[in-house]
Length: 341
Image: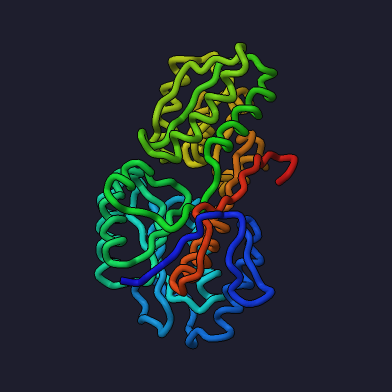
């Protein structure tokens, strides 16, 4: 079983070389540290490969995402591949077709365990459901790094499993940012709706809670509808179309991701109400940014998935070489509007 260690105190990492150290939130330093390690003793490694390419001489890191049909995860994939190519890592990127398919994601992880990959980075499709697969990886001596969506800590601990680190944004804070913006746009008075993610899914639940916490501070804001659209654009369209029919006086909507927000934008256009309803999304994907430029989407909360992918590969490589890393590595969130595109 491969040993791997985790620091108890996240603020500072053990130097990899004298005079060279990494600090959480200082991505450039981390990258330089790992590159320095490669320069002084790692075997010669070849570049990034797809899952079906021939293996390379170097360590193999797997990135298991929720899907590759979402622009958010396309950006994460790009960041991971850039890091893998730069660091000479053999990268396997795999994902189910749909974000809700946690069983397929578990099968992928079990296959990777059989392949004896060096580390598994995963964005869980189910915060509790994914736990048995992670425990199997633990027992096989394969370090697990959780990215973007947290695993349910109590469920993981009860099963005797653990993750080396969590790399991601504060989704609750992102929801609060969206809520404060919507309050400002509506001048603290109006009726709003929420398009939720997958029920029980940590990412969507945290974003929704943060949003609700923010608008609860304003008596003039009423949440009159809150329904899931399962992260999907088509469902965002259909669900929001029904909400509009039931609540024609609606003035704003917060969608827990951009695909659902863009679906809502389309439903608003079909109802002939473009420009009358403030729509706020989450992820700031390329399509969302285009919609912000056009003025059909008011804002989106960015959380930099390419940075998550890059950090996942860098930190996985550090763990493979028994370098201590923090138990949590934050990635910033910020509001994107037409003013700061």
